[in-house]
Amino acid sequence: CELEVLSTAASQLFESTVMLDDQAVIDLLTALRDVSTKATRQLSSSGSSSSSSAQLMVAPGQPSARLFALGRLVDVVLHNVPRMLLLWPLMVDHLQEVVESPQPTVRASALEAFDRALAGALTAASRVPQPANSS
Image (cartoon, rainbow, N blue to C red; front, side, top):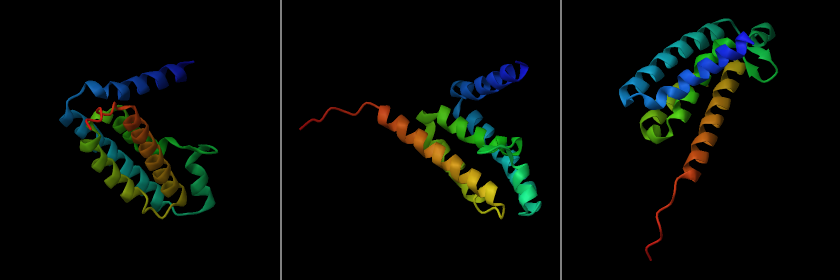
């Protein structure tokens, strides 16, 4: 029960980034990127053995807490779709770095994060009203 409360609070924290100004969101993304970079470097330096791959997963298909910042970086971008043009390059640059990891599970997490971001962006774009055809 306590874990659910903490998870909900964390989600609300990242959802509330829509109320921040542009620079504050950029600063948050930069901080998440720094944490993610440090975590992925540590994971990559641990080698590519099956035991290190197993450490990255808490359950099949679920990345460990070590990749938390990567997922939250994407969450912040998706919660701030109106600022997509400003935030997208920051996210994509980081995902390009992560996908170069020697650790297959880290690379897979980066690709899954990109897939989620792209699907979210396309879904949001499909909801934007199109201007009436003036012909």
